Amino acid sequence: MANILLVSFVALASVISLTLGQTVVVVNQPGPCFGCVLRNGIGYVVPENPECDTYLQCQYNQNGDAVGTLHRCGFGTYWDQDALTCNHIDLVQCIDTRCLGKSDGYRFKVSGKCNEYYECEGETRQKRACNDGFSFNDTTQTCEADQNCIAPQPVGCTLIEDPNNVCVFGQMVDGIQITQNCAQGLGFNVSTCACSILAPSCGPVSVPCEPLVYIDFETAEAGEYDNYGAVIDTAAGTAYFNGSTSIRILRLSNVEFMGNLKIKVSYKVDYSTPIRRTNEEAVITNGDCGELATIEITRTGPTTNLRAATFDSTLTRTTTDLSVNTQDDWRDVEFFYNKAATKLFGTVNDNTVDKPFNQTIVRSQCAFQVGRGPDLDNFRGWIRYIIVTTCD
Ligand SMILES: *[C@@H]1O[C@H](CO)[C@@H](O)[C@H](O)[C@H]1NC(C)=O
Ligand SMILES: *[C@@H]1O[C@H](CO)[C@@H](O)[C@H](O)[C@H]1NC(C)=O
Ligand SMILES: *[C@@H]1O[C@H](CO)[C@@H](O)[C@H](O)[C@H]1NC(C)=O
Ligand SMILES: *[C@@H]1O[C@H](CO)[C@@H](O)[C@H](O)[C@H]1NC(C)=O
Image 1 (cartoon, helix red, strand yellow):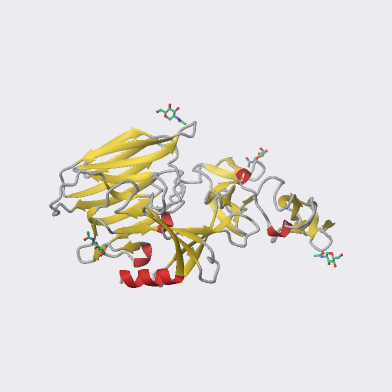
Image 2: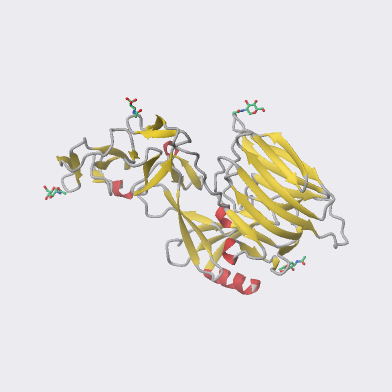
């Protein structure tokens, strides 16, 4: 199976170089991913997008077809194709193809908004708006009187009042109004454009915690991860890694973990090999694409090591390391960055250690990888589950 896949992969794509631990492939199938450079199976292209805030994540699926998944950058960020990440809007030039070849002052409408338009300046664009009671006419490129084009809220407030429920407010996201809750005890006041009214009746909001990733090897759907040779035993609920196999979780590439992050993994070392292993082995890392990992769970002998990289105030990369010893066969590991406590916790079975940790974990463009990691030996043993959550 693995061989067949590899053959179709090579037939469909041209491998342009093979560096240590990194394959680079250019998609040559027609489609939105055409020309995309895949590093270890994942790549990014800029889709046709005048808003500059989306990007297409490309990869080959198990059938050997190049598929793209459209992602949208967070508020206030644009896709940065040089850095291959969403970056602050001030740091990314939003090149709108509609401004190419146009002289300064050329204008066009913002779709879906009666009063907003873009104006080209040096082939980049600036957002502008007509006054209340005027709409932008794309044909004449001017603001024209239009009594139907009234901003629904006082200028400056983009949040929307709900006349029936003071505890919530509306927010437009991609042209769709979503409802957000004010904090407990507060109600929304459109005059201040904030949850600034004391409203004891607005109760606590409980948000269910959906894991970003939940893989157990009894029930995991194949689409949750890409398997590079690990042997799944659904009866035992384990995946076996023989020291040259791995699993990748591509959808954890390029995710910014701004708040809490909890990674749970259960592993058991295969000691049957006659060779004594003293090197550090990768259990989970996020450094599969030729970059240093920023999150690592590894083992050395009976020790589980947990590591997170941050940039300090001078942008120097530093790592915080925790290690927990146990002689137990199965090691249920929890890596927990608790933002409120400003601490990194490492738990293995009943033992917990912690260290102060008050920075954001550096984002990695690489996928999460089970069983492999840069500068680490590959894992030999079994894994029962991998769970990643950001909400508790
Ligand atoms: C925009 O201006 C053109 C030319 O004057 C006019 O024909 C058209 O109706 C206007 N469009 C709108 C939506 O008012
Ligand atoms: C909403 O805010 C405005 C401006 O601060 C204030 O005058 C008004 O009393 C507030 N409304 C309520 C219901 O508190
Ligand atoms: C590990 O498994 C892979 C895929 O099943 C196989 O190709 C490889 O030879 C095995 N390696 C070892 C060291 O057994
Ligand atoms: C983070 O912690 C370090 C040492 O514990 C402290 O010196 C630094 O001021 C803290 N930074 C922030 C942003 O809280």
